[in-house]
Image 1 (cartoon, rainbow, N blue to C red):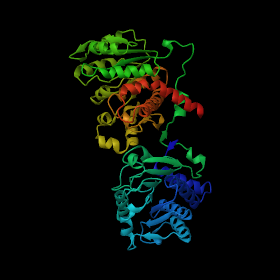
Image 2: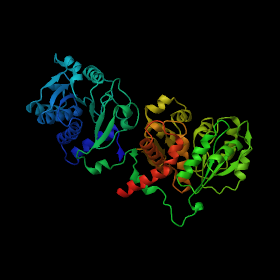
Image 3: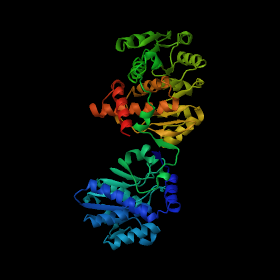
Image 4: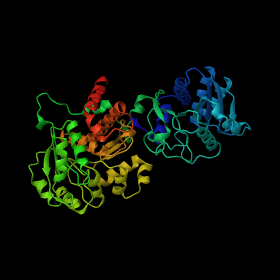
Length: 514
């Protein structure tokens, strides 16, 4: 499913009318019906419903909901954040007139009852927010701001129409004040605010409603796409009956230090659990010893160390080893010590196999080291990305889609910007947005597990962009299984690695159903 920008959404609406003959009032009617269907889910037995409507088409959707609710014997209050009917856009005004003819009695912001009605919102059972739509860009003020503040004070559940009022559709940032919705019904395609910024939180539980926009328009590419299990299932390598361990990919994990011994083990465990035929850990002796006691299935390559970290001489050992591997992971737990930087510089100058670059290896790049010339996937979290792009974390998070495009342009590699709804980009494809995962993944070691999954897919001949996209989805699915089995808070990275086989089976099953 493609992810729309505000401009793309406007173009879809315009073309639906101009090229396909769908009048705006018909789309507005269908949008209102879709929202009212959710109202009936949230208040199945009727009840007290307040509708807050703005001047534009979003307000027009709200007037349709008001009329339908009135017809179904809901007790409604319709508050309009405009001074009079003449302030409304033509399509919204038309819907208001129809609603009035059906018995809806709007209260405008110029009415002496407006402020009192806002203060009494706590007596309602549900609020429909139809104040601002996808076109909102300026900071909220006047009656709109008063209405948003009153809604957020009252404590009543809110259903937002298309976008929570006060949220920028593209960046997800707040326009001064914004509605905190329990549910959001958006139309045609998901929008960027659902995946980043405050919009990610304020949208609550969201759904995309079909309102009759022609499929040809919905299928037109945009800069970003939401990936799902069916897409991933079609790409995950099949395990052939006659295969042996050498046919299923050999992964090298270059990671760990005396103070961070666990990172290499988590990446290695993930590689094994995601189906790598062989996994080798190249690390200092103390890391190798610790891992050998935990994961006997691994191969080990002890490397020379300097003060508890991999030393420069380790480059010769690694490059001279019998490297029957198909991909590698560089970075987890390496530290940023000078010996490590010298080691990476020497290895990367001659490295020619696909690799995942994470954690301290990413920090080495931000210190000025050149990336290896091979195919690779970079997996920064926002802090690491801020160092790579030399800007603040706030700038990174203010528009994660823009950030990924900037990183791809600068680094010319596949990039995964980790976080809620991780975004994958590369120079040749639309961005991919991951749809799996949960807040429980926000804990130490999860990135190490992700590296192991992506490295396995690289070793099994998936190109970097596809390995990154599939690996991110698979990793998130394993996290969702842990949340179901254990609880959404408190499961560990090791448990996520352990859930990878079940997650793969669930993804494949979803693909077969589709």
